[in-house]
Image (cartoon, helix red, strand yellow):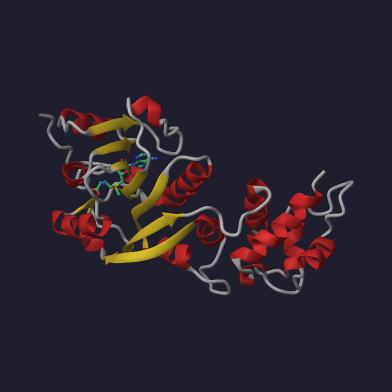
Length: 277
Ligand code: SAM
C-alpha cells in the first residue's frame, strides 16, 4: 500500500474532511442503493468509501495524480477513478460504463479555489442533457450565501442568477474550519442543488448567460448604463439599444442590475435574442 503523503497540496485546494464529520455529511447526501454518483475531488476517499458502500457506483474525478493512484490502488470494486481536472474532462458516461446510468447524483468537498467554475460546469452539463439530478457539495460559506442570495442583496450576482435559473438551492449543514485538515481560513457549508429545466425558459441560453455576466460587471451603475457592457447592445444593424430593449422588456433603466429577478433577466435576454441578426 502507498504511504499517505503527509502534506496537503494547497494549489489543489486540499482540505480533507475530518472523520468526525463524515457521517453527518453522508447522512445529508443520503445515498441510496442503485444510485450512481460523480464525486469531484475524492482526495483520500473520506466520502468515496461510504458513498461506494451505500450506492451502486462512484465515478471519482481527482486532479492530484498521487491521490488518484492511491484511491485506485485501494481497489474499491464499484469506484472508477478518473485522473484529471474536472473542469477540462468531459463527463463521458458511455466511456465509463457498459450500462450508462439513467440518472446521476453529484457529491464533493469542492476545492474552494475553483468551486464556482465547477458549479457552472455542472449547470452546463445539465443543460447539455447529462442526467444530473442533484449536487450536494461543500463550499466556502460566502459562495453558499451567493448561491441562495435574493435580488437586492449584497451577495446577489452572476452565480445566484445563473444557478437559480436551473436549480433550487438548499443549505444543509454549516461546517467550522475545524471540520477539515489542514484547517481552511474560512467557514464552510454543505448545499444541495436540485436541477430543474431552466425557469423561466429562455430563447437563447448563451445570450442569457452573457447578458447576466456583462451587466454585473457594472453592478453599481444603472441598468441602462450597465447594459452597455453587453456587446449585443446597440450592435450595428440591430435595434438593441439599451433604452429600446428595456422599454420592450418593461423594465425601468434607472434600476440597479442587482435588483433584477431571474425572471426579469430572462425577459431582457429574450428581447436581445429576438432581435439578434
Ligand atoms: N473529498 C476529500 C475530502 O473530503 O477529504 C478531499 C476534498 S479537498 C477539499 C478537494 C479535492 O479536490 C482534493 O483532493 C484535490 O486534489 C481535488 N481537486 C482540486 N482541483 C480539482 C479539479 N479541478 N478537478 C478534480 N479534482 C480536483
